[in-house]
Length: 392
Image (cartoon, rainbow, N blue to C red; front, side, top):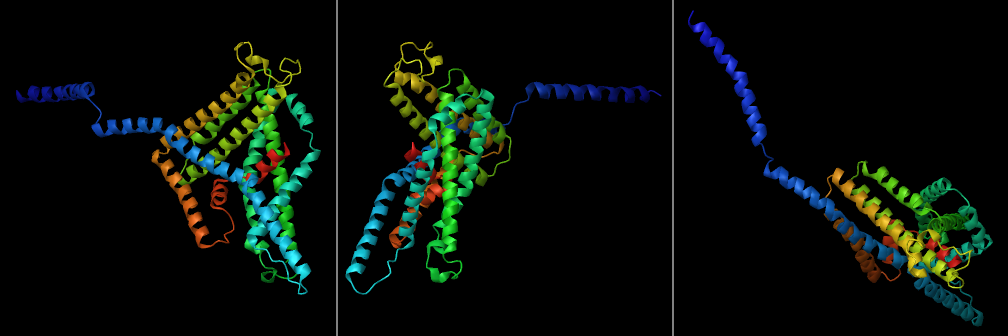
C-alpha cells in the first residue's frame, strides 16, 4: 500500500522535464555551421549573378556586332569578288572558241543570294511610309501600345527561331550544290522555292523589326509617362513569366542566348532612334512640332538637347539591365544553379569560334565564317537587321 503513491508521482514529473528540456533546446539552439555556410553561399551567388551574366552578355554582344558588321563590310567585298570572277570567266569564254560553263562554289552562290535578298527586300520596303506609320502608332493609347509591343516581340522571337532554319536550308549544299545530285524535275524548283521562302521571311521579319523600332521611338518621344508604362511594365512581366519555371542548364543557355539577342537589338534601336532624333532636332529645337519629350524638360531645365534625348534612352537600357539581373538571379536561386555556369556558356561559345577557325584553316572552301556560325547558334538574325538599317 505504501508503494502506490511513489509510483504515481514518478510519471507526473516526466512531462514537466520533457517540456523543460525542449524549452532549453529552443533557447540554446543554433544553426549548424554547414547550414550557415550554405545560406551564406546562396547570398553570395545571388549577388554574384550580375557580374557573371554581364560577362556573357558582353561576349555575346560583340559576337552579334561582328555578325552584323560582316553584312556591311566583308559581305559586299565578297560579292564584288564573285562578280569579278564571273566577269573575267565570261570574258575569257567570249574570247576563246571553247565555251566553258562558269562554275561557282556554294560559298560564292550564297554570297550572291544574300546580296540579292537584301536588295530585293530594301526595294520592297520603299513603299512603306515611315512617317505615316509613326503617327498612326503615336495616336494609339498606352494600352494599345503595350499590346502592340508585346505582339511584335513575340513575332520577333518566332522569326528568329524559324528564320535561321530557312536561310540555312537555302544556303545548304543540297540546295545550292550540283544539280546532278538532285532529280531533274526538282533540280531547279528546289532552289527557287527556298529563295522565295527566304525572301518572304526576311521581308516579314524586317517589317516586324521596323514596327518594333517605331513603337519604341513613340514610347521614348512620348509626352506622357507612356515610356515607363510601356517598357518597364513589359520588362518586369518578363520576370514573372520566367522566374517561377523549372530551368535546366540547357534551358538557361537558350534563355541567355535570347537575352543576348534582345540586348543587342535594343542597343541598336536606341542608337538609331537617338541619332535620328538628334538629326531632326538639330535644325529647329524650339519648334512646336518638335518630337522632344517635354516631360523631361521641367525636371532638368539646364540640360542640353543631347542630354535630354539620352535621359529616356538611359532609363530604358538601365531597366533592361536590372530586369536581366533579377531574372537570372532568381532563376539560379530557385533552380540551385551556381553563377559559374555562365563561364561555361562563354567557354561553349568560345570553343565554337575556335573550332570554326581551325576547320577554316584546314578547309579553305568553308561555307561560312565562324562568327556567323556562333551567331546562328545564339539565334541572331543579321540579314533582317541589315535590311532595316539599310532601308532607314
